[in-house]
Image (cartoon, rainbow, N blue to C red; front, top):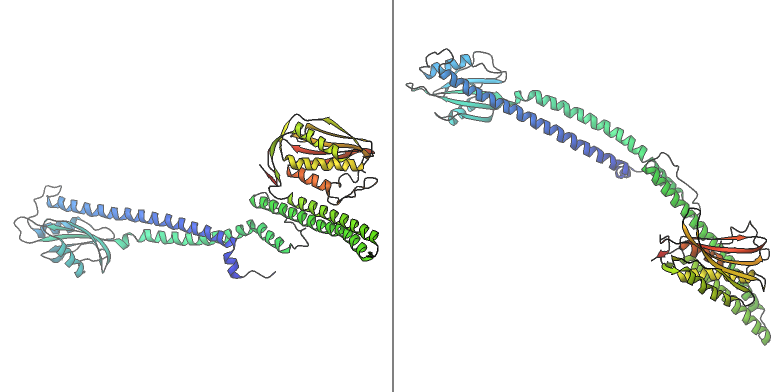
Length: 485
């Protein structure tokens, strides 16, 4: 066997299983991480907005005179001075006081960044703010992305205008959370790599029987169907192994049966062909009597060939759907009908109807009659002239307790040796020791095929003298192969 190519490995079931697992795991980790990140980010932004709102409230508190009952600031300058002194910026916050559109006050403490030095930001704030409207917004500046509040300030009696601005650097506020999720992404990536390695190994072990199945199938040829897949474990793959082994056994049996049939047919056809050819080669056209005798022999052998071909065709058809057509049949009436027909097979025997089953069964009456009369014909052929042949039917139960119908024929001819009793239903098998068959050797095979098509069986019991052959059919309508209703 040639090694599989990389493209084949990528397209393999193992690779597709692993790809599906990794895809689902990646989607799950990505969705979980993204959801957690967005929720946490929204929480941080909400906290910043709450702080900006508190800044507005604090500035209003200062403007109202504070807790000490101080006089209200008389000018915008005084109000901004108090605000810058009392409101201390957070770690990632910066503030500025603007008077008449010019930054005039900065925090006394050190801050992480200076918004008073960002001219574009100051211009934007001055442009957006007015005497009545507080502005909360987000903007990109030289210091980063800022979330800010601009509070207009006006004091009665003072012509100056002021703006108090507080801004948070969002990138700095989100930095800790962003670092945590970077770590999460790295851990997730490592986890996916580990999952991929473990999944590849596990999938390989689970699919090992499948590869063994493929290798076994590659070794199977038309001349060797004996290979079987080793059964390991107890799971779904094990069940598949049992199923495939069963299929291989059926295929092997079918091929062997076909091979034996072809060998047997070839052997059986040689005899009549050789006989006809030999007589034709030795025929003397100048002797009319010899011509007539050769003609009769040729016709007789051709009739035997025709019977042989018909029997083979019937056996082949017995394995196809529609071979039998089930119909509820009265067994007592069928027994009477078969007995009447069997009596016409031979006038040299005493035919006796022993018993009739008072029951109904789902069977193909024509096929069963054909098989039953075949048993009667065999009995008439082997039983000595003047002896008795019995026919009967009876209700019974098989070894599994299933309700069955037994249809039987019994004779008083020479018995069948016990070592041959199991083989008489095989194709082209003939019993010896006084029971040699002059026909095709397919009669009992046809009986067995019809029985099996009904889900039943055919069997024989024989002593030193006398043989009883029985067709056993189930009374239920459970359809085996080759049956239709």
